[in-house]
Image 1 (cartoon, helix red, strand yellow):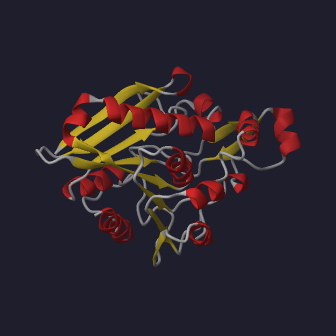
Image 2: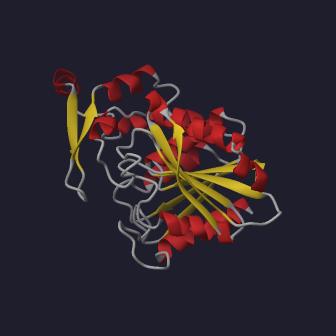
Image 3: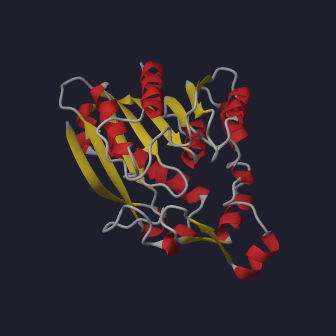
Length: 279
């Protein structure tokens, strides 16, 4: 297995996007999966490396990355040393970052040598689930899409809503990160960018227009993004496939750090279902 970590490409506003690639050497072109992390997420979180290796063993090239404004840096891609960048993130920046990663996949010599560029799939976890839905609807290079504990409505997320008068007056609001204990800023530009691009950023609109295979996986014990959001996504696209994993939480039994050699059972179940869907 060939693993390359922390490849640097330029993201939004010149900030770096860090990319990891995982694949096995062979002469058979491999279908590609690009994975998008969620809110307060990062590519090296928990069990994501083990997830990548599981897909490689199933014959895929797996690519994951940090959004340019997720709060990580080149020197410290794990957690959130750059809270100023985090505060200046928004959905539009993440969509643009994802497009840059897809463009890079189609141009990178190493990837082109081993990959089947006609078999590109996106997986998005949590907020990333909404991002991949929107991008898949507007980019015909994407052939399959998987929402993993994905959100159905950006307008209702805490990053977008709140006391708008106070937020505008202060210019910033803070959300506690329960794990790192950081007060994570959201500048008012987040709301302004959402309102300026609301039609594009409406997940219901994107999902309703999807013409490619679409798999929705959600745990019925998810307390961060309730399972009802998965039922909403499924109702908006009658050709989608909905898989509910019993007793699975928002991260399918994983945590950070993940120090075991095997995936938690609910996450393994999710990966198995994705592999069956893609094959």
